[in-house]
Image 1 (tube, helix red, strand yellow):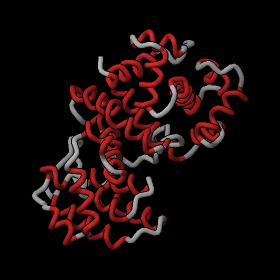
Image 2 (cartoon, rainbow, N blue to C red; image 1 turned 45 degrees about the horizontal axis):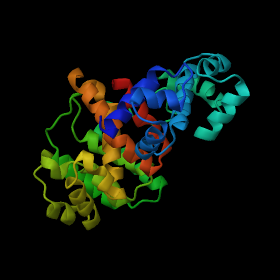
Image 3 (tube, rainbow, N blue to C red; image 1 turned 90 degrees about the horizontal axis):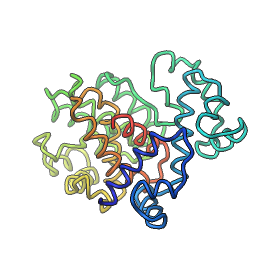
Image 4 (tube, rainbow, N blue to C red; image 1 turned 180 degrees about the vertical axis):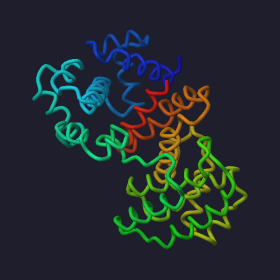
Length: 304
């Protein structure tokens, strides 16, 4: 078994045994490797140790139950924590805030409206059916907060609306809402305006539109066109060879696709989820963006 496939099978095994005691030796035996080789392969793929990964998945699953109304100590105990204080320490160390805020979020307006219940741990979600106008307003507001140059985004938005005109997503929404969501995610990941503009045209050079790099360079910026050209030159299984801007672009695009996977044919769910865990999660781990890592893990597991 190839190492990426072995890790994928191991992730599945871990996910179904989070409520039981696990050791590195047990997981290595289940994968068919020695402890040394298994631990090394896991860390190379996931950028963290096996038991560190197990701990985080337990914290996230316990958090889901707390947000849904379960008592903290009961939820924590089911996932291996013997005390409220021990769970709180681990949670704060992993996510940077107290688990008591999870209970507060449950009473918030966002939760009551039906937003993603894991928003406190993941990147902020958007209404999956928001219009292009609503999304662009969010993009500009986010960009202004980060002191980005919005003129480039206006130019990229105009070009994207023209290039994707008439195309629809599986959800029935205008296709341009996908690159808009990608651009919003990029700004929230700390991207500059040229890279966010590339998000607005994320698949323009991959056959989705008739645009050329020269047209993008002329209408938006040379940097935006250059990122899109580099991204178009990489397959998903080559992300480990791509530069940081390309990786950020592809991760933002994949995250939005995974957030809206429910609208695709169910026969694609498992395929896309396994791709996410095998190819995109390692790239996210290398980026060190914890909210992105946690959400890709969660969505990948959900759809496998």
